[in-house]
Image (tube, rainbow, N blue to C red; front, side, top):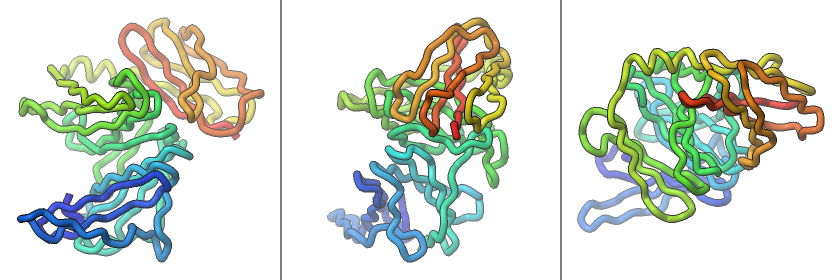
Length: 278
């Protein structure tokens, strides 16, 4: 991406210790790159948490690129709003992206931003440590994205999902290029987009009564047949897996405080909701 609007593509990349490196292209032929200072927030070098994973996107549609950053731990999504110009971005603070009022938290996450359902609004997709890719549909606006649920759409078959979204076969539908710890690159071609299926999927939602919670929480599903509910911690470890018939009460009195996520799956698909134990 062209970070400084000089007409040449640059590289913005995260690293193990949480910083975000900026490599500015200085010539096209031959291609040369100069490492600039790491990106800062205020006067401090950004430390977004281990294995930072940045994405540049105009989040609030003001014509200036902002910065969305995932990480390994604590596994949240940080949003840095550009308070200067598109030629010379300046970040002074960050906020955490919310899902149903709770900060998104997925261990070793890697985000991408793309309009997956082609409704004209940016959505979020996140690759996580277990190798899954989750889709968060924007139910707000392009200027003020809102997320109220997620859907598990791809399992790459191994841990550490990293991916890119593009129309690979130029059929007008978004496809996914993905990799993981096994080192292979997989391509997932979207074959069709069904309006009827999208309307049905919109009715399949999860809610969590009393979330954030301290002792127990009740997870309810709308539009699900009998299936299975699984609860995972930030490391992707399964805390429990039980039958699901519309609602499930999780007694988490012995669970450590922190972020969890619950996935409900039946024969028609799945949905995920983030949980926060205080």
